[in-house]
Image (cartoon, rainbow over all chains, first blue to last red; front, side):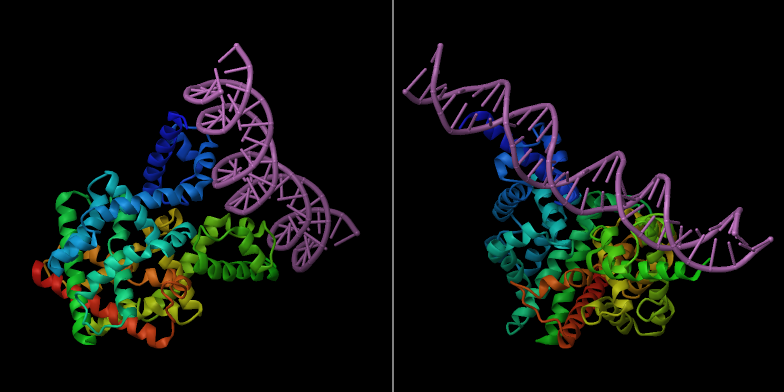
Length: 211
Length: 211
DNA sequence: GTCTTCTTCAAACGACCGTTTGAAATGAAA
DNA sequence: TTTCATTTCAAACGGTCGTTTGAAGAAGAC
C-alpha cells in the first residue's frame, strides 16, 4: 500500500464530515465531497465501496471520538450530580452553535440523523446503539422513579436527545428573519440554561406523577 | 372552465397531502403523486405551475384547516387553563400517531418541516408565521414570567413545537427494533401525559429561575 | 358545421444522482 | 529494467428528478 492512498482516504473523510455536518448525508453529493477533497470522482467507490460505505466509516470514527469526550462518556456523567450531568449533556449537544471544530461537526451529523434516520444510520445503530442510547437512558433514569418502565425511559431518552437538534440543524435559519437570533456565547449559555431547566423540571415533574 | 379540471386539481391535492405527510415534500416525487392521483405527469405543472406551487397550495389549505380546529386555534386555547391548553396542544400534535384522518396528515406535514424547513415552507411562513407561531408563543408565555424576553419566548415556542414531531415523523421507525413500541391509544395517552408534564414542569422551572 | 379555449396526454429534455469502466500513472519488488 | 499490484483519472452509464413540448381531445360560442 502506497502512502498517497491513505492521504486520499483522509481527505475524503475530512471533506465528508464537513459536508455531512452542514447538509446531512442525503443533502451532500459525492461530487461535492470529491470536489472539496480535491480527489477523483471514483475515489469514494474505490476506497469506501460507495457513499454508504464512506458514511459508515465516518459514523464509526465520529462515534468513537464522541464517546471519548465529555458529555457523552457514560462514566464521566455518572461522576457528576444528575443536574450537572444533564447540563453537561445539553451543553455538549449545543456545542455546534458556538464552535466549528471537529467535535461540533460530529454532533451536528448526529443531529441530522435525529430528525429522520437514514438507512445507513439505522444499520449502524443496530450494532452500536447499546453504548449510544444507554448513556442517555441512564441519564434520564436518574430523574425517573426506579420502577419506571423501560419504555418510558426510552421515550424520555429519545426526547432528551432531540431537544437541541432543532437548533443545531437549523443554525443558519435562526440567524435570519423572522427569528434574527444572534448566536453568540451569551445566547448559547442562556439556551443551555433554558433547555437544561426545561428538562430537569420536566423529568422531575414526570417522575412525581408517575412514580 | 370545464368540470373535469377541478376534479383533476382535487385528485392531485389529495394524493399530494397523503404523500407529503408520509415522506415529506422532498421525499415525494411528482411521479409518485400523479400515479397516486391517476392523472398525467404534466398536470401538476399545468394546474399549479410546478411542484412548489402545488406545495404552496397544499400548505395554504392545511394551514387554514388546522387553525380552524382545536389545539391550534388561539382563541380556544386562551379559554382553557394554561395546563389544559398545553395538554390540548400536545395531544393535537400527537394525533397522527393514532389517526390517519385529514387533520393528522396536515399535522404530519408540518412535523416534517419542523425538522428542516424547505424553501417553499420558509417562504410560506414569511407571510403566515404571525398566526402560526404566535399561538405557540402565547401559550408558552403563560408559563413564563411577564418580563421574559421575546427571544426566550420564541426559543421556548420553537422548542415546544418540536417536542412531538420526532415521534410523529418516525412513527413507523419506533414500531421496529430496537424500540418495538406498540403505538396504540394507551401509549399515546401516556406519551401525551409525559410530554405535557415535561413541558409544564420545564417551563415553570425555567420561569422560577429567570423571572 | 367552424372556431376558440381549456384540458389531457405521451414523449422527451436537461440536470443531477451514485456508480462503473478501462486505461493511464505510480512505485515498490524482482 | 522489467514486473506487477495499487492507485488515480476522465469519461461514461443507467437511473431519478422536475419540467417542457407539441399534438390530440373535449366542450361551449358562433
